[in-house]
Amino acid sequence: MSEDEQVSRWSNAFRQFGELECRGLSDLCERLALGVSDDIELLRWFANASGPRTNANQLFAAVHYLLLRGARHEISQFYPTLTPAPLPSRDAYPAFHNFCMEHENEVAAVIRQRTTQTNEVSRCTYLLPALVTAGLVSSAPLHLIDVGTASGMNLLFDRYHYDYGDGTTCGAQDSTVRLRTELRGKRPPIAPIPSITARVGIDLNPIDANDAEATGWLRACVWPEHVERFRSLESALEVVREVRPNIVKGNAVELLPRVVKEAGSGSTVVVIHTNVLPYFSADERSRWRDLLQEIGSSRNLIWLAAEADSLLTAVGFCGLDAGRAASRTALPLAMVSFIEGQRTDRLLALTGAHGRWLEWI
Image (cartoon, rainbow, N blue to C red; front, side, top):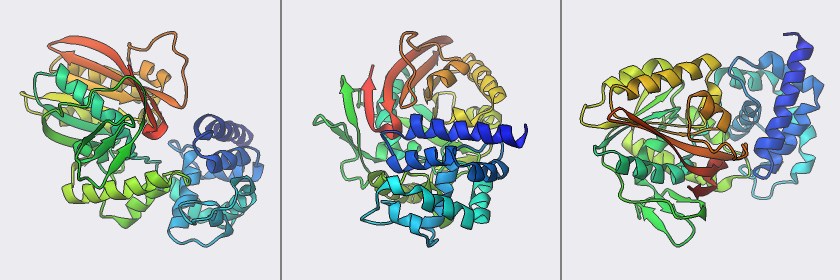
Protein backbone atom coordinates (compact mmCIF):
# COMPACT_ATOMS: atom_id res chain seq x y z
CA MET A 1 0.00 0.00 0.00
CA SER A 2 1.41 3.42 -0.99
CA GLU A 3 1.88 6.22 1.55
CA ASP A 4 -1.02 8.17 0.03
CA GLU A 5 -3.28 5.12 0.33
CA GLN A 6 -2.26 4.65 3.97
CA VAL A 7 -2.96 8.32 4.71
CA SER A 8 -6.38 8.04 3.09
CA ARG A 9 -7.17 4.87 5.02
CA TRP A 10 -6.20 6.41 8.36
CA SER A 11 -8.04 9.64 7.55
CA ASN A 12 -11.23 7.62 7.11
CA ALA A 13 -10.52 5.59 10.25
CA PHE A 14 -10.11 8.69 12.43
CA ARG A 15 -13.21 10.32 10.97
CA GLN A 16 -15.29 7.21 11.63
CA PHE A 17 -13.87 6.92 15.12
CA GLY A 18 -14.83 10.51 15.90
CA GLU A 19 -18.27 10.45 14.31
CA LEU A 20 -19.42 6.94 15.18
CA GLU A 21 -17.66 6.00 18.41
CA CYS A 22 -16.90 9.24 20.24
CA ARG A 23 -19.90 11.41 19.36
CA GLY A 24 -22.11 11.84 22.39
CA LEU A 25 -19.58 10.12 24.63
CA SER A 26 -16.39 12.18 24.46
CA ASP A 27 -16.48 15.60 22.87
CA LEU A 28 -12.72 15.98 23.29
CA CYS A 29 -11.90 12.70 21.55
CA GLU A 30 -14.42 13.44 18.80
CA ARG A 31 -12.89 16.84 18.05
CA LEU A 32 -9.35 15.47 18.19
CA ALA A 33 -10.23 12.55 15.91
CA LEU A 34 -11.85 14.82 13.34
CA GLY A 35 -8.84 17.13 13.56
CA VAL A 36 -6.45 14.25 12.89
CA SER A 37 -8.58 13.09 9.92
CA ASP A 38 -7.76 16.37 8.11
CA ASP A 39 -4.15 16.68 9.30
CA ILE A 40 -1.94 15.28 6.51
CA GLU A 41 1.31 15.80 8.44
CA LEU A 42 0.07 13.89 11.47
CA LEU A 43 -1.55 11.18 9.35
CA ARG A 44 1.73 10.51 7.52
CA TRP A 45 3.57 10.23 10.81
CA PHE A 46 0.88 7.96 12.30
CA ALA A 47 0.88 5.69 9.24
CA ASN A 48 4.61 5.12 9.77
CA ALA A 49 4.18 4.59 13.52
CA SER A 50 1.28 2.13 13.22
CA GLY A 51 1.41 -1.66 13.12
CA PRO A 52 -0.99 -4.44 12.02
CA ARG A 53 -3.10 -4.22 15.22
CA THR A 54 -3.06 -0.42 15.58
CA ASN A 55 -6.37 1.47 15.79
CA ALA A 56 -7.23 5.16 15.95
CA ASN A 57 -7.95 5.11 19.68
CA GLN A 58 -4.33 4.16 20.41
CA LEU A 59 -3.15 7.63 19.46
CA PHE A 60 -5.39 9.30 22.03
CA ALA A 61 -4.58 6.72 24.69
CA ALA A 62 -0.84 7.17 24.03
CA VAL A 63 -1.05 10.95 24.48
CA HIS A 64 -3.20 10.54 27.61
CA TYR A 65 -0.69 8.01 28.95
CA LEU A 66 2.26 10.36 28.57
CA LEU A 67 0.32 13.23 30.15
CA LEU A 68 -0.70 11.09 33.13
CA ARG A 69 2.97 10.16 33.55
CA GLY A 70 3.87 13.82 33.91
CA ALA A 71 4.59 15.15 30.41
CA ARG A 72 4.12 18.90 30.63
CA HIS A 73 2.25 20.58 27.82
CA GLU A 74 -0.61 22.99 27.28
CA ILE A 75 -2.80 20.16 25.92
CA SER A 76 -3.22 18.89 29.51
CA GLN A 77 -5.44 21.91 30.21
CA PHE A 78 -8.18 20.28 28.09
CA TYR A 79 -8.28 16.95 30.01
CA PRO A 80 -10.80 16.61 32.89
CA THR A 81 -8.71 13.73 34.26
CA LEU A 82 -5.78 16.14 34.63
CA THR A 83 -7.39 19.42 35.68
CA PRO A 84 -10.58 20.27 37.63
CA ALA A 85 -11.39 23.15 35.26
CA PRO A 86 -10.64 22.00 31.68
CA LEU A 87 -10.61 24.42 28.76
CA PRO A 88 -13.27 24.01 26.02
CA SER A 89 -12.51 21.02 23.80
CA ARG A 90 -13.30 23.03 20.64
CA ASP A 91 -9.94 24.79 21.07
CA ALA A 92 -7.84 21.69 21.77
CA TYR A 93 -6.63 20.47 18.38
CA PRO A 94 -3.70 22.84 17.71
CA ALA A 95 -2.19 21.96 21.09
CA PHE A 96 -2.77 18.25 20.44
CA HIS A 97 -1.00 18.45 17.07
CA ASN A 98 1.93 20.26 18.67
CA PHE A 99 2.22 17.69 21.46
CA CYS A 100 2.32 14.80 18.98
CA MET A 101 4.98 16.47 16.86
CA GLU A 102 7.09 17.55 19.84
CA HIS A 103 6.89 14.06 21.41
CA GLU A 104 6.66 12.00 18.24
CA ASN A 105 9.22 9.40 19.32
CA GLU A 106 7.62 8.85 22.74
CA VAL A 107 4.08 8.67 21.31
CA ALA A 108 5.19 6.30 18.53
CA ALA A 109 6.92 4.04 21.06
CA VAL A 110 3.72 3.72 23.12
CA ILE A 111 1.64 3.00 20.00
CA ARG A 112 4.04 0.26 18.90
CA GLN A 113 4.41 -1.32 22.34
CA ARG A 114 0.77 -1.40 23.47
CA THR A 115 -2.69 -2.31 22.26
CA THR A 116 -5.85 -0.58 23.44
CA GLN A 117 -7.09 -2.22 26.64
CA THR A 118 -10.33 -0.73 27.85
CA ASN A 119 -10.81 -3.23 30.67
CA GLU A 120 -14.03 -1.39 31.54
CA VAL A 121 -15.37 -2.65 34.86
CA SER A 122 -18.81 -1.13 34.14
CA ARG A 123 -19.32 -3.86 31.54
CA CYS A 124 -20.10 -6.04 34.54
CA THR A 125 -23.48 -4.28 34.75
CA TYR A 126 -24.56 -6.40 31.79
CA LEU A 127 -22.33 -9.39 32.48
CA LEU A 128 -23.95 -9.91 35.89
CA PRO A 129 -27.45 -10.66 34.48
CA ALA A 130 -25.87 -12.59 31.60
CA LEU A 131 -24.05 -14.84 34.07
CA VAL A 132 -27.20 -15.20 36.19
CA THR A 133 -28.93 -16.36 32.98
CA ALA A 134 -26.06 -18.76 32.25
CA GLY A 135 -26.40 -20.17 35.75
CA LEU A 136 -30.10 -20.76 35.22
CA VAL A 137 -29.47 -22.48 31.88
CA SER A 138 -26.75 -24.70 33.32
CA SER A 139 -27.45 -27.39 35.88
CA ALA A 140 -23.80 -27.30 36.96
CA PRO A 141 -21.43 -24.69 38.46
CA LEU A 142 -19.69 -22.35 36.04
CA HIS A 143 -16.04 -22.34 34.99
CA LEU A 144 -15.41 -18.78 33.75
CA ILE A 145 -12.94 -17.97 30.97
CA ASP A 146 -12.66 -14.26 30.14
CA VAL A 147 -10.97 -13.51 26.80
CA GLY A 148 -9.16 -10.17 26.50
CA THR A 149 -9.25 -9.98 30.27
CA ALA A 150 -6.45 -7.40 30.76
CA SER A 151 -6.26 -7.32 34.59
CA GLY A 152 -9.16 -9.73 35.21
CA MET A 153 -11.84 -7.30 36.44
CA ASN A 154 -14.74 -9.07 34.71
CA LEU A 155 -13.84 -12.32 36.47
CA LEU A 156 -14.60 -10.67 39.83
CA PHE A 157 -18.11 -9.50 38.88
CA ASP A 158 -19.63 -10.80 42.14
CA ARG A 159 -17.40 -8.59 44.30
CA TYR A 160 -18.97 -5.32 43.08
CA HIS A 161 -22.09 -3.35 44.02
CA TYR A 162 -24.68 -2.63 41.30
CA ASP A 163 -27.29 0.09 40.91
CA TYR A 164 -29.71 -0.30 37.99
CA GLY A 165 -31.27 3.11 38.48
CA ASP A 166 -34.83 1.97 39.25
CA GLY A 167 -34.30 1.36 42.95
CA THR A 168 -32.79 -2.04 42.19
CA THR A 169 -29.41 -2.69 43.78
CA CYS A 170 -27.54 -5.94 44.24
CA GLY A 171 -24.11 -7.43 44.66
CA ALA A 172 -21.58 -6.85 47.42
CA GLN A 173 -23.19 -4.11 49.51
CA ASP A 174 -19.91 -3.06 51.15
CA SER A 175 -17.85 -3.03 47.93
CA THR A 176 -15.81 0.05 47.09
CA VAL A 177 -16.62 -0.62 43.41
CA ARG A 178 -20.02 1.05 42.87
CA LEU A 179 -21.35 0.46 39.36
CA ARG A 180 -24.38 2.20 37.89
CA THR A 181 -26.19 1.89 34.58
CA GLU A 182 -29.33 3.32 33.04
CA LEU A 183 -31.95 0.60 32.72
CA ARG A 184 -34.06 0.68 29.56
CA GLY A 185 -37.03 -1.63 29.26
CA LYS A 186 -37.58 -4.53 31.61
CA ARG A 187 -35.51 -5.41 34.64
CA PRO A 188 -32.77 -8.00 33.99
CA PRO A 189 -32.33 -11.11 36.16
CA ILE A 190 -29.88 -10.30 38.95
CA ALA A 191 -30.26 -13.39 41.16
CA PRO A 192 -29.31 -15.99 42.06
CA ILE A 193 -25.57 -15.43 41.61
CA PRO A 194 -24.29 -18.68 40.05
CA SER A 195 -21.79 -20.96 41.73
CA ILE A 196 -18.31 -20.44 40.23
CA THR A 197 -15.77 -23.27 40.33
CA ALA A 198 -12.88 -21.44 38.63
CA ARG A 199 -12.00 -18.15 36.93
CA VAL A 200 -9.35 -17.83 34.23
CA GLY A 201 -8.45 -14.85 32.06
CA ILE A 202 -6.65 -14.92 28.70
CA ASP A 203 -4.91 -11.90 27.21
CA LEU A 204 -2.16 -11.18 24.70
CA ASN A 205 -0.77 -8.57 27.09
CA PRO A 206 -2.12 -9.12 30.60
CA ILE A 207 -2.16 -6.23 33.05
CA ASP A 208 -0.50 -6.80 36.42
CA ALA A 209 -2.53 -4.69 38.86
CA ASN A 210 0.64 -4.14 40.89
CA ASP A 211 2.55 -2.78 37.90
CA ALA A 212 2.27 1.02 37.96
CA GLU A 213 3.26 1.35 34.31
CA ALA A 214 0.75 -1.24 33.14
CA THR A 215 -2.13 0.15 35.19
CA GLY A 216 -1.17 3.59 33.96
CA TRP A 217 -1.97 2.34 30.46
CA LEU A 218 -5.40 1.13 31.62
CA ARG A 219 -6.09 4.60 33.03
CA ALA A 220 -4.93 6.19 29.79
CA CYS A 221 -7.46 4.14 27.81
CA VAL A 222 -10.33 5.79 29.72
CA TRP A 223 -11.65 8.77 27.77
CA PRO A 224 -10.73 12.07 29.47
CA GLU A 225 -14.29 13.22 30.30
CA HIS A 226 -15.21 9.93 31.96
CA VAL A 227 -14.02 10.84 35.43
CA GLU A 228 -16.45 8.43 37.15
CA ARG A 229 -15.11 5.55 35.03
CA PHE A 230 -11.62 6.66 35.99
CA ARG A 231 -12.52 6.37 39.69
CA SER A 232 -14.29 3.02 39.26
CA LEU A 233 -11.16 1.69 37.57
CA GLU A 234 -9.06 2.70 40.58
CA SER A 235 -11.43 0.90 42.97
CA ALA A 236 -11.60 -2.22 40.81
CA LEU A 237 -7.80 -2.40 40.59
CA GLU A 238 -7.70 -2.52 44.39
CA VAL A 239 -10.00 -5.57 44.32
CA VAL A 240 -7.84 -7.22 41.63
CA ARG A 241 -4.70 -6.64 43.73
CA GLU A 242 -6.38 -8.36 46.66
CA VAL A 243 -7.71 -11.39 44.74
CA ARG A 244 -5.02 -11.80 42.06
CA PRO A 245 -7.11 -13.71 39.47
CA ASN A 246 -5.50 -16.41 37.34
CA ILE A 247 -4.52 -14.91 33.97
CA VAL A 248 -2.82 -16.74 31.10
CA LYS A 249 -0.76 -14.79 28.55
CA GLY A 250 -1.22 -15.58 24.87
CA ASN A 251 -3.53 -15.73 21.87
CA ALA A 252 -6.98 -16.97 22.90
CA VAL A 253 -7.49 -18.85 19.62
CA GLU A 254 -4.41 -20.91 20.41
CA LEU A 255 -4.91 -21.22 24.17
CA LEU A 256 -8.64 -21.87 24.57
CA PRO A 257 -8.55 -25.66 23.97
CA ARG A 258 -5.90 -26.11 26.68
CA VAL A 259 -7.68 -23.82 29.13
CA VAL A 260 -11.00 -25.59 28.54
CA LYS A 261 -9.35 -28.99 29.02
CA GLU A 262 -8.38 -27.91 32.56
CA ALA A 263 -12.05 -27.34 33.48
CA GLY A 264 -13.63 -30.09 35.57
CA SER A 265 -16.12 -32.39 33.87
CA GLY A 266 -18.75 -31.42 36.44
CA SER A 267 -18.78 -27.76 35.43
CA THR A 268 -20.17 -25.77 32.52
CA VAL A 269 -17.51 -23.71 30.74
CA VAL A 270 -18.53 -20.09 30.17
CA VAL A 271 -16.43 -18.19 27.61
CA ILE A 272 -16.82 -14.40 27.84
CA HIS A 273 -15.54 -11.65 25.58
CA THR A 274 -16.49 -7.99 25.31
CA ASN A 275 -15.20 -5.70 22.54
CA VAL A 276 -12.47 -8.19 21.67
CA LEU A 277 -13.27 -9.34 18.13
CA PRO A 278 -12.03 -6.11 16.47
CA TYR A 279 -8.53 -7.23 17.51
CA PHE A 280 -8.93 -10.65 15.83
CA SER A 281 -7.92 -11.06 12.20
CA ALA A 282 -10.50 -12.42 9.76
CA ASP A 283 -8.77 -15.79 9.91
CA GLU A 284 -8.81 -15.77 13.72
CA ARG A 285 -12.55 -15.02 13.72
CA SER A 286 -13.19 -18.00 11.46
CA ARG A 287 -11.07 -20.22 13.67
CA TRP A 288 -12.83 -18.88 16.78
CA ARG A 289 -16.24 -19.77 15.32
CA ASP A 290 -15.12 -23.30 14.52
CA LEU A 291 -13.36 -23.71 17.85
CA LEU A 292 -16.42 -22.81 19.92
CA GLN A 293 -18.60 -25.15 17.86
CA GLU A 294 -16.06 -27.95 18.32
CA ILE A 295 -15.83 -27.45 22.10
CA GLY A 296 -19.61 -27.21 22.41
CA SER A 297 -20.05 -30.52 20.61
CA SER A 298 -17.97 -32.34 23.23
CA ARG A 299 -18.99 -30.67 26.52
CA ASN A 300 -21.46 -28.19 28.00
CA LEU A 301 -20.43 -24.67 27.01
CA ILE A 302 -22.00 -21.21 27.25
CA TRP A 303 -20.55 -18.38 25.17
CA LEU A 304 -21.31 -14.77 26.15
CA ALA A 305 -20.21 -11.94 23.86
CA ALA A 306 -20.85 -8.21 23.57
CA GLU A 307 -19.59 -7.31 20.12
CA ALA A 308 -20.69 -5.42 17.01
CA ASP A 309 -23.40 -7.05 14.88
CA SER A 310 -21.13 -7.79 11.93
CA LEU A 311 -18.47 -9.37 14.12
CA LEU A 312 -20.96 -11.59 15.95
CA THR A 313 -22.23 -12.74 12.57
CA ALA A 314 -18.66 -13.41 11.44
CA VAL A 315 -18.12 -15.80 14.36
CA GLY A 316 -21.37 -17.63 13.74
CA PHE A 317 -23.94 -16.07 16.08
CA CYS A 318 -27.43 -16.71 14.67
CA GLY A 319 -29.62 -14.83 17.14
CA LEU A 320 -29.64 -11.32 15.70
CA ASP A 321 -32.94 -9.79 14.63
CA ALA A 322 -32.58 -9.18 10.90
CA GLY A 323 -34.71 -6.04 11.23
CA ARG A 324 -32.57 -4.45 13.92
CA ALA A 325 -30.43 -1.60 12.64
CA ALA A 326 -26.77 -2.01 13.54
CA SER A 327 -25.32 0.72 15.72
CA ARG A 328 -21.75 1.44 16.71
CA THR A 329 -22.94 2.73 20.10
CA ALA A 330 -25.37 -0.11 20.94
CA LEU A 331 -23.73 -3.51 21.21
CA PRO A 332 -25.78 -6.70 21.21
CA LEU A 333 -25.14 -9.03 24.14
CA ALA A 334 -25.25 -12.56 22.75
CA MET A 335 -25.51 -15.93 24.45
CA VAL A 336 -24.93 -19.26 22.75
CA SER A 337 -25.45 -22.34 24.89
CA PHE A 338 -24.33 -25.86 24.04
CA ILE A 339 -26.09 -28.04 26.60
CA GLU A 340 -26.15 -31.81 26.10
CA GLY A 341 -25.23 -31.26 22.47
CA GLN A 342 -28.11 -28.85 21.81
CA ARG A 343 -27.15 -25.39 20.53
CA THR A 344 -29.32 -22.36 21.33
CA ASP A 345 -28.56 -18.79 20.16
CA ARG A 346 -30.17 -15.94 22.13
CA LEU A 347 -29.92 -12.16 22.01
CA LEU A 348 -29.99 -11.20 25.69
CA ALA A 349 -29.71 -7.42 25.57
CA LEU A 350 -28.52 -4.26 23.91
CA THR A 351 -25.88 -2.28 25.76
CA GLY A 352 -24.55 1.24 25.57
CA ALA A 353 -20.85 1.97 25.25
CA HIS A 354 -18.90 1.13 28.41
CA GLY A 355 -22.06 -0.18 30.07
CA ARG A 356 -23.72 3.25 30.18
CA TRP A 357 -27.17 1.74 29.62
CA LEU A 358 -28.80 -1.67 29.39
CA GLU A 359 -31.89 -2.77 27.47
CA TRP A 360 -32.68 -6.33 28.52
CA ILE A 361 -34.49 -8.43 25.91
